[in-house]
Picture 1 (cartoon, rainbow, N blue to C red):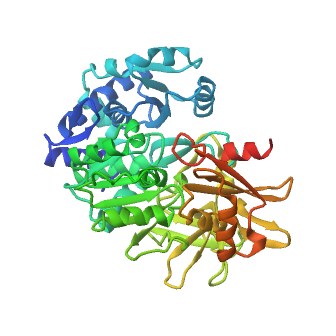
Picture 2 (cartoon, helix red, strand yellow):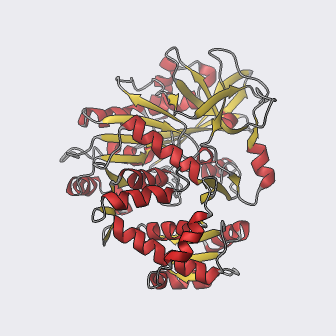
Picture 3 (cartoon, rainbow, N blue to C red):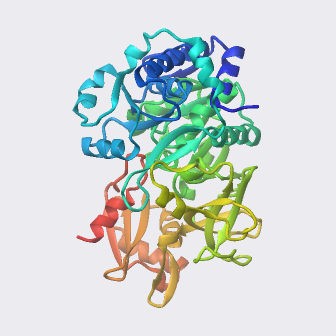
Length: 506
């Protein structure tokens, strides 16, 4: 019986002790070394925190393997990790600390100033000092014996639509389910070489880290600077022989927008997987034309259901204006489409809120019972026994082939001039235009106007209106057009809709 992700780590360490597990630009670590280092960190944590179990331990993260080692050390100690971007404003980090009340905080020695400036009653531990501890095998074995598959593994902060950070708590069993599905559905094995793009406080990275140890594979941490220099990025992929990437849509878009494969293409790439936002088909088609032999997969799912609940293998050409399906659910995952009151299922072919059931669901929001109960509700289609579902706030419907389509956010379904409109449909139409790099649509409720924010080289309003006239009824056309040289991105490289909403008020 598998109760912890540590079972995967130790199984791979037994089969491939000398093989590189994780590497950054400065160093790499083998599976055997990773287990030993994590146990030393775990012993230090237990000694300094009094042997507490199932408590949050924060990590001020970097794009390096020491962050990953710290994660596994925390898991060995019987606790769960909370990755925090050290470059966040101090006030925001302190608000996260107040929210989650961690038992400890791990940081690199070179970031001692950042840690010291934090006003928080928390045990502060230097990663390099923890690595000098002696591994207490007997004590760690006792901790291991008390582990349950429902124990928390990590908490990742997400702001959601309110901008207030809350920690999404995910258990071991959910991640075990996830990587088992990825192995079975996508054929991951020990030959996979992952190119990690996502920051470690973004749940996309969970797929990289735990697919690596599940399969005895290798993961390279890609420096973020390479995503502004696509030519060097491609060279890095070739140098490290990376064959599998699970990236945010925005990362693939950067490469397509600058024609990043003009001089060199990734020669070893076989699996291209993406999630986080709607993939513009013109970006997907750029990748597919340049790398036609790769497997392309559209992944869907919020942090609260452990990364992904559905997938779609792209096996045909999609026109720029078509909606790319988010596909079918993974095994052991249920999908429901509920009406606006979350009381019953919608009819065949109708749009409803995407709700998810199964062991992929997060445990909830840490220290936020009220918010947890509002989002994780009893299945309204079953009142015979307790069955939690997570309401994603995303709207979807099924196409004629039984594939799920993402339509828009629940709060992006508006009533304008007497018409019910999905803002996502407008975004798909605009993003299909060849002269548009990216675009999002918001609704100004106060002024009752549809506002289009778009990234392009110059004012393209007339061209947009002309093209929309071929695709959408006039009542769906935006009332305002705001052009950007670069749309604002949040720290996870997604278009920052919160910031754009703030600009509506100006």
